[in-house]
Length: 219
Image (tube, rainbow, N blue to C red; front, side, top):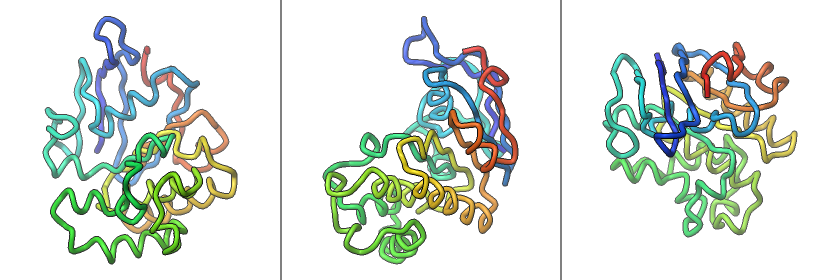
């Protein structure tokens, strides 16, 4: 279970953007978090992905209370969550070719030997040919780069996925393709999903249930 209880978070303790947030995600469940731009959804998503330390409250993942965030989180917890952000160009190292971008988490966790096979499998799943894998971020479109970022999020086979406005910058066909990749992965692994967005139609079709921001937090 992924549980956020009483979470207050932001970038200035005097002016938090999330106040007293509560959210529970069961294994295998898909929850859509619906809210307008600027309400604090992305900050809460980063807390759920163990990438941002809350100022107050607790995060529990698979029965363990999280005490360290980002690189201070235990590897077993840190690698249990895969995350895809809204803007792929802000989350991709511009120096890396897409092949190395996808393989980066494996290399960082000492599993370099698995990289070639894992990248080949995921590239096929997300629709990236060998020619695209050899390119750097500035040489591909936003949609192609987001495909690589999704593959990177899945390469460690996480038990939980956090998709923060993953499709906001994509056209309809790419959106449908990437949602299908996520759903195939979830069907195979039983992974839980937190999908953050502002499109009620997409979240309604994608998720088991959708909850509004004002039902989750006071921020």
